[in-house]
Image 1 (cartoon, each protein chain N blue to C red):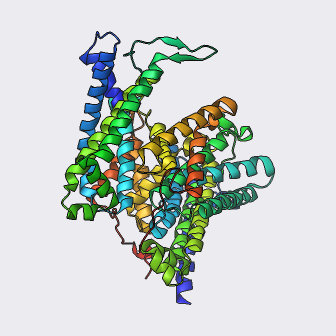
Image 2 (cartoon, rainbow over the protein chains, first blue to last red; image 1 turned 120 degrees about the vertical axis):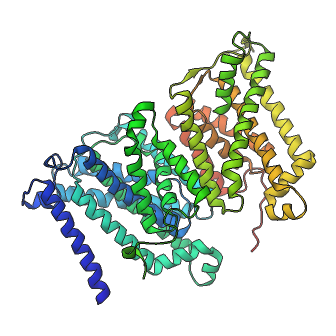
Length: 333
Length: 257
């Protein structure tokens, strides 16, 4: 009873936080629309649009990083195609909203879009998961990278979603409060999965697959479940991305995006949920802080940062910044 | 990537007025191989040696990190825009009758890669050093136990590997005279795919894998759509790994507990 109460309290607290953020950001308006899902462009000069968009991208990156932590960190499946799932989610949601439900109220649009994005992405994740199960280590990484690229190239060749021109005119629905709330919910969901039966089975498989099998865990079924859950969340993150940018291009979802998410996990510490969050925070904020340097050199300096941090962390602190430690509100005790 | 840029800068500053000839080409290739080998050795020393005892996944992550660092660091050093790679070989067309016209460069590239391949085959399968190398690939600890200097062998392997990649870089520049720091990304992935297709650890297999991959890519680009060309390589990789994980010529390894 006490346990349920504390989780409920936490969720209510963050819900309240989200409401307050939206209340302030919408210029103290009390209409339900602006409190729950504020349309953008209404923020009242409190935060400059630049910081606003960084915060939204930070939230989406945390969701992605945490969903990859489920695969890479907890189950020990090294996948390099996370951008593919995100792309599926983003394009599915954008298509559902613009083609299927163009006139529905935006809450329904967003709900159906995200759900369809997650479901379709999970379906593809199920297919990839079942077909890649015999592989491990480098081979699994290469095959998932291949799948990610195939997804991208197929999307590039579908003319209905813009092809190489990119998809434009996607309605923009995400705001700071909703991204904040959804990020927290995702983190809590992943924490619950990790602490439950499924999560323990995942950790057992990561430590020693054969021993886990001996203990009565079916590694194949657990791995497929990890794939499905992770791709579902990545798809939903893609949908949020689509509805916060308003524009999609296949160039966003190349394998460098997958490496970006992997780097977040590696920097924070593989196997630590707090680490995935810390890594996402560092690798989102650091390139923005160094933007002056980027303007000076005129090239995309983000990739150098990602690569350098990955190599340095592996040499100097292979367990990542957080190691196996968790923050108190995310620890399993 | 490094190979073609080392070659380019050597042509530009080392031998500015060289006529295109076989001698120039060989000189450029040797310099490019030396340059890449040097950088390969530095990377081995600083990035891979500290990780010799780490789990495979850490080494994989480092490998990805290093290649991204080289490619995007290359953009920082050489600039992101493509540069022109000058002719280092006399170029003429050979008419084979019908509609088939061969570029003499294509033949030269084929011959040079064939020679390098034979050298590699000899080194890996016929020399004492190659035997040590294969022993390490089998089991690092056991190789160490029977008196192989693991660090030295891996060091030399890095020299061979990166100098061959450097030679490939120059040949790439000869074939497609427009080079930029990101030119190696897809060929690198495809090299891996070709190796998997033929069977890891089998040089003949790698060559056959590369031939199949290259031909099928050209056919897909020609008959279906050129945008699907890069997807095909990954489709082949996935099919091979699912249907015949050991590769076309590979032998199945039994995993013992």
